[in-house]
Length: 196
Ligand SMILES: C[S@@+](CC[C@H](N)C(=O)[O-])C[C@H]1O[C@@H](n2cnc3c(N)ncnc32)[C@H](O)[C@@H]1O
Image 1: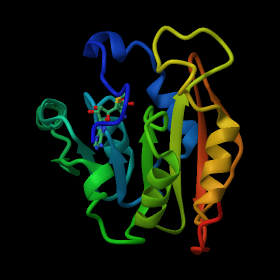
Image 2 (image 1 turned 135 degrees about the vertical axis):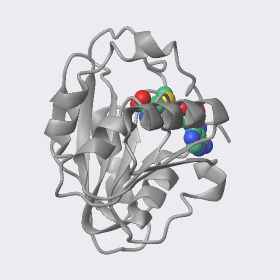
Image 3 (image 1 turned 90 degrees about the vertical axis):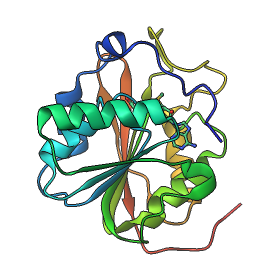
């Protein structure tokens, strides 16, 4: 099931909308992370820079074959070898990655989709205790040049509350990621039962 409003504008325009090094610095993406999973590589906007920073493998998944192919092409051209890019519907098939096997899981520009708590729980499942789910999204408190409708766009405190409701994640500080985004680092804790 392709998540609602998860289509992309053109690649060149999309990539003017982020300060990727700043975002990755503030989220703590560096060589202390070994293996990482990502839902929705898109054009590989974050995939390649993340893969260059981490010390292990970046497993990335996209439901759209064209997006996976574009990311593979860019990785090949750039000689970035630690990316495994697969076409997969993560919502119906899960990440297909062993539980507690990743240092981090990236949910970038995607938590406006259906069933965000189920998605956060699946992301938490693949992360080892002590690792983190890292999420970014479009700000809701100012007009942004792109991003899903405000009706479905999550506010930072909503993401933090959903994360806690998985019983597997702890809320962290909300990070400013100018110009248009905010981010959250959700630490993986030992599993607890789902609360309603
Ligand atoms: C808004 S884009 C964000 C891409 C990338 N994370 C970024 O921030 O540049 C969302 C991506 O998620 C993919 N996607 C949507 N639903 C998905 C699903 N169920 N499983 C895997 N990928 C999905 C879309 O095809 C799209 O490439």
